[in-house]
Length: 155
Image (cartoon, rainbow, N blue to C red):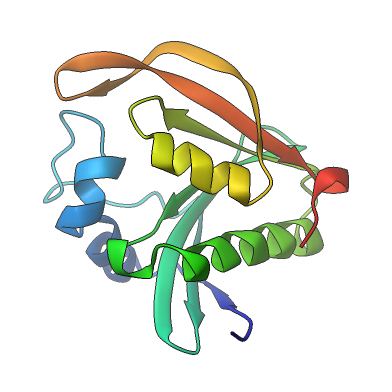
């Protein structure tokens, strides 16, 4: 399996088309957000990842502060598995090689254990719990806080 191609995009329609795919939206969107009226924040980073087989996923990134970048992967079911893991590692490599950020973090609702395992397989470590911070299916859920520092990253 070859390397991934990572492209930055500001194409609002393309981002929206991917993020609001029903199989992704039902997981990534918190209660009360309408896919028809939602639009991406183009001041944030949007990375399209593809490989020799085609589209793999969309990654949203935005700074928490001058040293830390938050990441939100959106991986359709058909590309999950080895292709997705490879894309996550290569996106982290891209971030650490092309930006000033020293750490990448994510918040994962505790109802998505599979997403936590995905992040950990990419090298992230559980760092804490953001209590009662995510509304889904009419219930408030905790979120795991995971992160990886640049010096901890291994491809």
